[in-house]
Every structure is written in C-alpha cells, then in structure tokens.
Length: 149
Image (cartoon, rainbow, N blue to C red; front, side):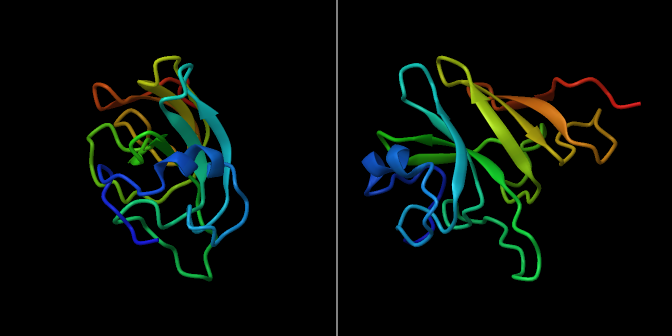
C-alpha cells in the first residue's frame, strides 16, 4: 500500500481498527506489527503502538542494521486518517524517530497519554523516558511525569 499524508483517507478504512493489532506484516495494513491498541469510548479513534513504516508520508525508516523504534499513532477508522501522536510541543517534523509506547486515550479521543524516550518538551533535558499528554484538539504536547533526579 502506498504511503499517504496524515489527512488522506485509506480506501480500506474499515479494516484499520480490525488490523491495528495484527502481527502479520504484508497484510496491506502496515509494514510491521502493531500492539497496545486502544479505542476511545465511542470507538471513533484508535491509538496504537506500531513499528510500521508505511502508514504516514515522511516516516523515518532506520537502516536494516538498526532496531526499528515504535511510534504511537491515532487512527480514525471511519475516514482512515492517521496522525502521529508523539510529536514535539513545538509541532516540529512528524518524522521523529524515537521509541513511543503504551498509549491510552480519553473517552472523547482528544487526549492521548503515552511514554516516549524522546525529549518532546523544552523542560525535558535528559534521555530517560517520560510520560506525555498530547491534546489532539489543541495540537499541544506536555510532559506530565516528574523530572528525573
């Protein structure tokens, strides 16, 4: 399946939610396994932790010799829209490569909590994983874990 922009719908949008946890690569629903999928209360948004590199245009694909790093994506099954959740507070490039895992989503799908090894906010100056809150409605990211000593 060709890569698409975050706002471009998939032609197989109904299958996105069903395959969000699929472990077979090559199914046409992502190049690699997805795990930790969870849906908003009304199931309009699914967040997932994935190693797939073909779900968004501009995704960073590490060389084969490097370990792929997980990312957290929000998927809207009805439209097929896919959005990267673990983005810096500045809203910089969506091609950020760093482990982001353990997503959880609010009932209305607007807020996502996740863990990331990448410093996504200015107040995070260490290389230790932190817990972040992404407000999808306001396009903001804030660190909610306490600073490490």
